[in-house]
Amino acid sequence: MEKSFSQNVDWSSPETKRLIKEKAQLEERLKLFEELQHKFSELKEWFELYKAEPELEILKGFLEELKDFEQEFLEKETTILLSGEYDQSSAILSIHAGTGGTDAQDFAYMLLRMYVRWAEKRGYNVKVVDALPGEEAGIKSATILVEGPWAYGKLKGEKGVHRLIRISPFDANARRHTSFASVTVIPEIEEEVEVEIRPEDLRIETMRASGHGGQHVNKTETAVRITHLPTGIVVACQNERSQYLNKMTALKILKSKLYQLQKQKLEEKKEELIGEKRDISWGNQIRSYILHPYKVVKDHRTQFEAFKVDEVLDGEIDDFIREYLLWSCEANKREPNHEKRKA
Image (cartoon, rainbow, N blue to C red; front, side, top):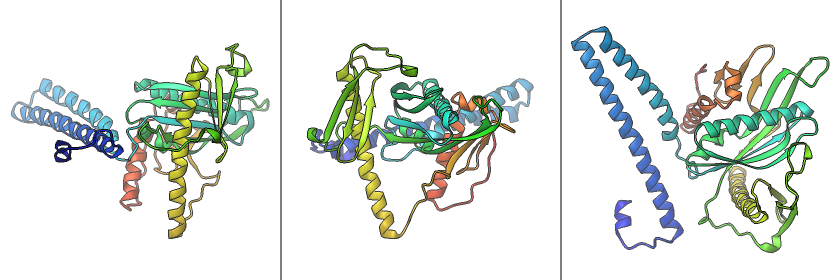
């Protein structure tokens, strides 16, 4: 790759830009390995020192270094596992309330808060691009843009149906309710990726940006809704301060959705040719959040469980992200046995 860059190349071509991006990803991976190798060497020195002088203070120092190494390894492991074409991209995450009425809309808001909290804690820039408030509580739907490196790679495993089981706070008889919400995650497509969007294929509408419960927070029509007529895809944006910026953000998201649709059609064509058919029925939830009669969050793909439910709903989902990436790697290697892990 270095040799190809040393020759005469067209730096503006999409292929060159792709190679530059791939080179940067490989360099970052190499850096992560080197950092872990250096940390391991330091740990080994502590161990050798303790073998030579088995004193309590040296043992304490070794155990502290071991704990730091374990934490650093887990953090870097997640990034090392990311190898998809768009894993390094920003992410566009959408949540839609499903069956369950007000409870489902409240659950959709709980998921929205969970992802926003996760992103903010990890230093990502988060924009709530659009949100449709629920009639009594929560949201019917919402879309957020999580900007920063590896956002898509880390969040892609959140795509699917999520299930909540709890005593409903909206039920006067305090009965247990089950509600659902679906999550979709797509990468933000960069400018150099070509996706044809013809002006005549768009219906652009403007409206007032509204707050929760329908309260108007802007007296001018700054919110924008764009409908792509050939596909029926609708994108709305109301978080920016001007109509122009909302339109640009909406077009950016539309471009990503159209690109994802193109890829999806190719995948469906491949599945048709090789006779595969994936079941995408509503009952196939990827994760359950159980708050009654006991508390646990369980991922049904990896079998990973976490019992600190409040922490998970407050954005602590790194363990689920890492377990999904490990499970996905194992699945790609056709090693179906994945031992149950607990937190």
